[in-house]
Amino acid sequence: MSWTNYTHSVFITLTAQPNPEVLTIAAVERDTALSKDTLRIWERRYHFPQPLRDLKGERVYSQADVSKLRLLRMLIERGHRPGNIIHLSISALQEIVQQKHQNEPLPADLAQIIEPLLHHDLLGLRQQLLQALMRQGLQQFITYTVSALNDWIGRAWLAGTIAVFDEHIYTEHVQNILRNAIVDQHLHNDSPRILLSSLPGEKHRISLLMVEGMLAIEGVSCVALGAETPIHDVVEAVRAYQADIVALSFSEAFPSTTALSCLIAQRAALSPTIELWAGGHGLDRIQKTPHGVLILRSFEDMRYALQRWRTEHPNNQHLTVSTPIAQPIT
Image (cartoon, rainbow, N blue to C red; front, side, top):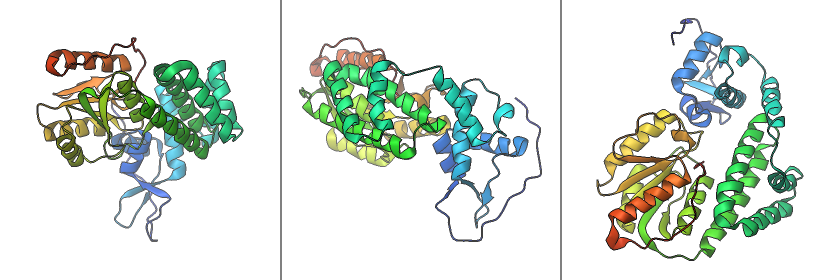
């Protein structure tokens, strides 16, 4: 697509000390999943966003800009044209998102779980989550309940239906429950040994715990490093724990171009004998898979990859039979 260059831009230079309320263009790219090129094109074509300049002349963006950019990306992915909505206010954009929510109500069982959160009832939220886990078992709890609630929470936060602190509270409760459930699993300590992590810039931990839970069901020995592990440290951890596979998670908020370059760099840093798996919505826009990387689009893909690895390494095979899994890795 060709764009008409708009050559005149007005910027305000900041003369004060660095402001924690503003973000660099790299941080905005990470937080909104909009590329730097897109941000600059919108700046020229639509005069939004209009970033300030720091003391070095670099673009910096306000929190309000970032909030609006998140809403714009979400609506554009749903088919809206940038030029038709980019000049709308945040409240107007939120109204469009809310209208979409009204047409996609949560199923009754999931709405029952969310209800305590909306009333700031922490004990009720925990009880509802634990009851769902006990009714469904860990596999269905991850693939149905947590997957659906994650999507709803993300959309509700963008739409302004829930506050940032509500999203944080939900995240902490689900993470704690998943950690305890994983510990309670009967650990077979079977091969392969999989090292789980995300790379710097990817802060989301729920996806890693969901993957760890599904692998625990399969009897896999996991080494969970948590989020934002530098590439070099991943390599060192592989050596220390004698891992067979590295599995990385990329959420929807992680820019696809950055994810691609990270995967290429991580693959180059690892021994060729170590497999590199990657999953998450941050990889949905990657069309060409890097050489030596296995991109998993769903938990079912992960299960088949696990079966394939165990077939190719029969001396280490201790296959745990489980029911099919067919939910996306979020």
